[in-house]
Every structure is written in structure tokens, then in C-alpha cells.
Image (cartoon, rainbow, N blue to C red):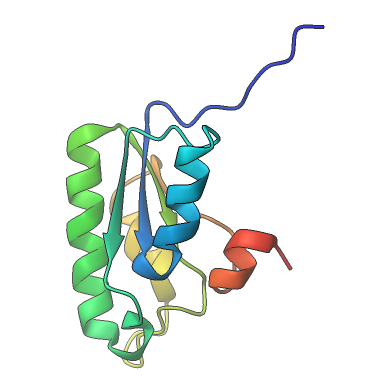
Length: 113
């Protein structure tokens, strides 16, 4: 039987530092073979302006390594009280090769709803 194995080659990840240990474990087990994983400081959902700045900086860094970037952040992690459009709107500025996982928070990102 010829099973196709999923691969993250050609993709870099930008993740909240809260998930660092979990993503490192997936790397060590050989499941996660992304080109690069960049982390933001954990807990930035409490400081939206800093979260925005770090996510933008990390995505730009990730694009230096890979053409595609997956952002591992939940939809509830970044809420700009001025704009309210959220992280997806912010990421649209990078074009179609930068996508956020469809999760609401970090537990949802790992285990699903």
C-alpha cells in the first residue's frame, strides 16, 4: 500500500509561543517538517498592538524562507478594539500564500473544537 505522507516542506509557521513545546514535540516525532517555525511572545492577546507588530514581523521573516506561511493563532487571540477586523484581515495584506489556521484559541488549534 502506497500511503501519501503529509508534509509541511515549503511552508513556514508563525505561532504563538504558548504552543512552542507542542510544536517542538511534533517536530521531534517527524510529523512537522516545516521549513521554519517562528514564535511570538506568549500571552500577547492581552497587548494587541504588540501582538500585531510581532505577527507582522514574524510573517515577513517566514516569507524570507518559504513562499507559504501558516499562522498558528486563533481568531479570538487578536481583537483590535479600534478596527475589530481581526487577524485574518491583517494577514490578507500578504496575499493568498499566508493563511491562518481555522481555530478560535490555542486549545482549539491543537485538539479542534
